[in-house]
Image 1: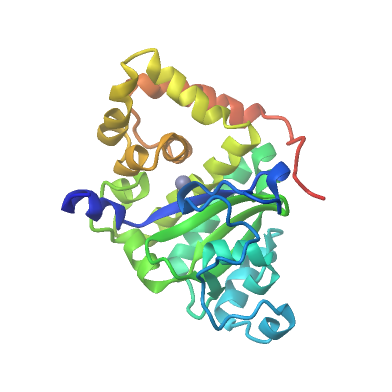
Image 2: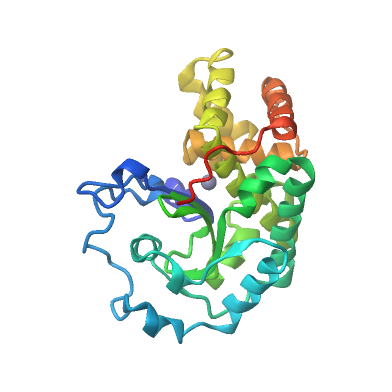
Amino acid sequence: MNASTRERFTQPRDGIFVVKLRDAGGPGSGNFGHAGRPGKVGGSAAEGDGEKSEDTKQEAKQRGKAAEAFHSHFKSKGYKVAHVDELPAYIAKILKIREADTDLPPEALSGIEAALNDIKTGSPALHAAVLDTTFVYGHRKDPNVSATFGQTKEGNYFVINANEDAVADTYNPVDPTFTVGAKHFAGDPEQVYRAVMLHEIGHLADAMTGDNITGALITTLAQRMPIDDIPDYFRRKVSEYAMHGGPKEAAAEVFASTVLELPLPTELHGFRDDLKALLKRAAPPKDRRLT
Ligand SMILES: [Zn+2]
């Protein structure tokens, strides 16, 4: 890849990992979105921190104040939280994550809280699904990931990266058009993290609808332009990441823009209004993926 492409890919971004129910634990299982390592779930090929033990009894003693602070803040508001040592071992391996040792800046914390309140107010049904999703604040090896949504057989996760480089780059990115959060709020940790959290909740909403938010977005545009023009349209009208991350990232970016009432191109106004209506009236989730 050329220099400018490489630069775009070192921008703060997020990730999705999806572990399909039917594939869980079996040979060749897994479908990890950005991680791109199918077949490695539950395998022995992890390249995480070598010294890290899978013995949860050992790791329980290593819990730090930073994760405790983040978790107790959201737990007190009714959200589910988990420490790194409480994650299934294969998920911890995929994420290359360890217990956080630095606090998230208070502005970023309040940005995440603002996003949760946006959903609580605007879409009680989606908020019920958010309440059923587990928050993990942990230090990931990858400094270019801000947050991740994960859908697994154990349930859904929001993973917020404590890596200080990732945190700093999230609200002060090299390319301020990379995400809708950076594009509209670069330098403002609270608003950028609010947008990041809404982007992740967009992935959750998409998953709840069987990826229909992504499907409807692409269908809407395919009726108006040649399909080959859609990626560049996303880059010009939504964000760089909406193009580079693929259709699901575009849907999450448009979701965040919709909830934040950020400007969207006229071609997407109908989609935006349908999405708003869906959020208001959506029935409680049937499938909460709890065992
Ligand atoms: Zn995403």
